[in-house]
Length: 124
Image (cartoon, rainbow, N blue to C red; front, side, top):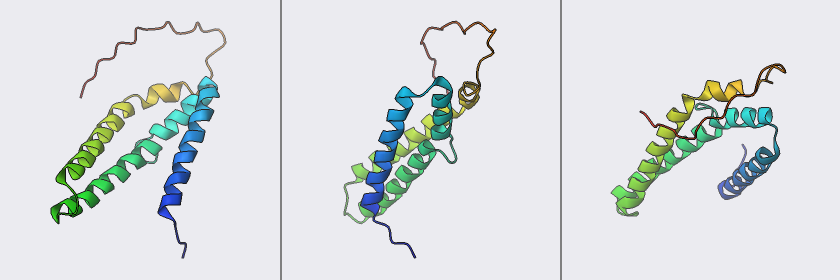
C-alpha cells in the first residue's frame, strides 16, 4: 500500500502546473493547442479534475458546516466555485474542436486567417 502525503502532493501538482505554464509560454502554436486541449479536456483534463476536486471540497465543507465546525459561507463559496468551474468547462467544451484544429499544421498555400475582433458573446 502506498502512503501519500497530501500536502506534498498538492505542492507537487501546483509546481507541475507552473512548469506547464512556463512551457506553454514558449511553445509553438501546435504544441500550445495540444497542451490546452489536454488541460481543458472535460473528463480527464486538468480543468475537469480540478472541478471535481472543488466539488469534493464543497461536500466536505457541507458536512463540517452542518455540524457547526465551519461557517456555512465556506460551504457556499466552494459550491459556487464548483458550479462556476463546471459552467466554464461546458463553455470551453463547445470550442474543443477549434482548439483541436490548431494542433494541425496549416497548409503552406493557405492564407493566414484574418483576425477577428475579440468580442465574445456568452451564451448558455
